Length: 296
Image 1: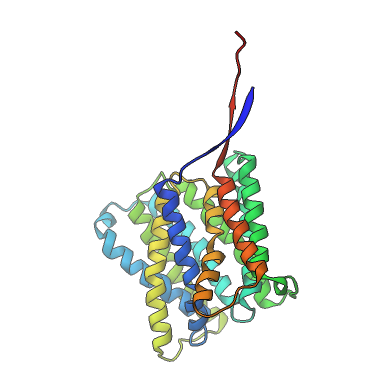
Image 2: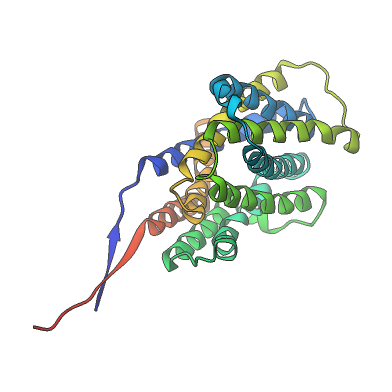
């Protein structure tokens, strides 16, 4: 029996996930800017209600066939989106971006194990290798400062946010081939937005004073969120949670590149980290092919 490695070409679904990962990376500066003018839960509510409104306009004809299965699936994913984005946004009020990037990156190695646990299918060894390389790369991108943190409110919120992020990726894969794409997108975005606003009274957060900063950021990120969630729902019908997560790990690489264009200088460790993330994605694209040799 012989063993060899075979490359797989990136499919349209995987290329689409790389595209939305680039969008993700480009939104960090906008969120950081918006947090200077708005509270986290109001902004999360605004962002996803705008996204829900856009998705309703696109898929309004699909609403007629809405089922309880669509509502249940969309609501469960929406709760995960609300928890992940909400807690991450909350954490960014008190911790810097490098610490947030490092803590959030903990979801990358968690997803292969979650897939193993919930789907009862062990991902291939190269998927674990790819996740490990991507996580190490994210650690280097975050920089040494990410290792020197104390578990304050911001750090704790960001750590907890990794769990719903994992849950979102797993649930999308569970429901992707069972429900209507348009209806589940509407429900999950609407759920995340309403929960964001509903959290405000419990945290003592009020409606911020009018500012074009949070208006422009909220609408812009609403459009981005609609595109991101719609693409995830479509692409993860055929892309495994582990493979999708390794692609998503490229988000800090895109963010670093955009930061460089904005005038930020990247340290050598961050460049090495970006290379490791890319290598992690490439490793996940490898397949081990075994051939049986027959004697004459």
